[in-house]
Length: 290
Image 1 (tube, helix red, strand yellow):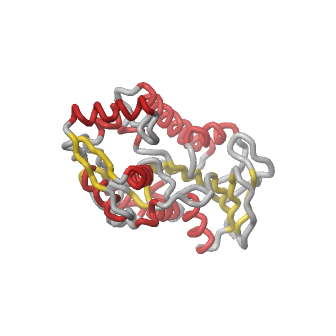
Image 2 (cartoon, rainbow, N blue to C red):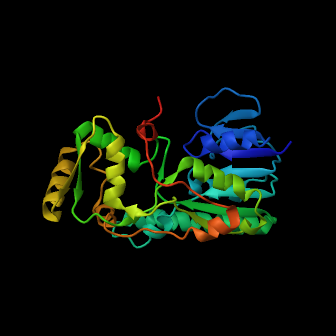
């Protein structure tokens, strides 16, 4: 029986990936920072990439569904025998590379260094590695963008946007990402490659937010403000510490008007990637119970 090691197995992408691997007959060892009970075909290890005892000495595939920089550091020093590695990064490597926010530029550089480190280390070992870059992830109530919008709108009963927030987006469902990771196992063409994984529909930021608000009950209002008024309201919210506003920087606001669109064709060609249209439901933005 084939054996997979999954980091981030309890996360929003890791959970549907575990289901898919087990359905395909894999034996899975997954790592979580929380204590979890084993299930048939699934063994949980307690720990993280910095401190996890009892890792197997050899597996057929390693999946990283958590922070790529932490995985890259672990992979550089580990001596575990494995012929296949699939790791998730982020399209933030591209979208934040030239951001006006130094912290966002540093994030992009960390992602780039991590990708390079994983690919170089895999090449040294003769290991087939594939890196996957999702766009805006949704579907499990654990993302930091669309679920955050839904929860803030529910709390405020409205959600403000600056006018002309029409930059194009491609939100992608967590199960489509899990399917893509699974497909890498059956695609020799994906060895040594990096793929953007956008969702199946491209739509303006405003329309994306509108679809999120349409499924929240009671339905919040979408309020569009002139840019100066939006900037004043945002500054006031930051000063007051109003929940959720503190993390919304000027660079993030500017991106609402910027197209962030990625080519789906390489993943479609090599992985049979066919993500769903953006048709959200309320359950997709319900945070899981603590």
